[in-house]
Image (cartoon, rainbow, N blue to C red; front, side, top):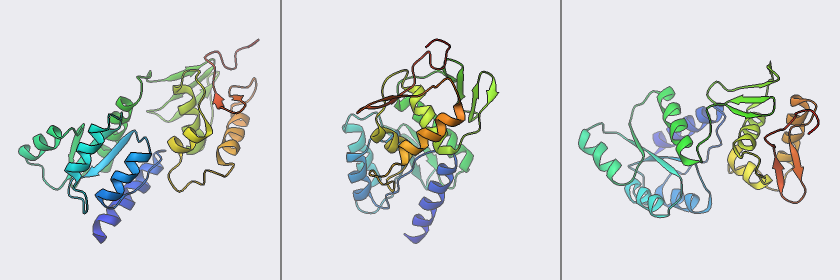
Length: 221
C-alpha cells in the first residue's frame, strides 16, 4: 500500500507539472465518493484498488453517464486482461510499469474526448493558445504564462464565448486542496489580463463568472 501511495503521489506531481489539476484517492471507496461529486475529465484508475475494486468503480463511473474517461492501470499486460478491462467500459488501458510521457499523452487524448470537440489551436481575436505545445501568442508575439494562468485561459477559450464560473475554473484548473473561499481565481485572472495586455480579452460577467468573446481584443469591440 505504501508503494502504491508513493506511485500515486509521483504520478500526481508529474501531471501537475503538465498543467493538470489532480486529486488522489488511495482506495476504491474514496475514489467513488470523489467521482460522485466532481466532474473529472479523466480518471486514472488502478484496477487492483483496496476497498471497492477498480473493476466495480469503472462500472459505476460508466453507469453514471458522465463524460469522464477512464484510463485503467494494471500490473498485467496480457491480452485477456486488456480485453476484460475495456469490456468493463474503460476507454484505455496501460500496463505497469509505464513510461510517464506515454501516460501524459494518453491522458491528454482522453481529456479531449471528455469535453466538446475543440480545434487543436484555440483562437479568439488575435490571441492563440496551442494546448499541445503549451504556448500562447498575442498578435504573433509570445506571452509567457504560469501553469495556472495557462489553464484558466485554455478553459475560457475552449468555452467559445460562454461564461465560465469561478467555481468551474477552480475545479478544472486547481485541485481539491484549493480553498473555494479564496480570491485565487480572481487574482489569477487579474495577472492573466495584465500579461495579455490591451485591448482587454477577458470579460467579467458580474455574478456569473468570466468569458472570452470570439472577437476578443479586436479594435472597436
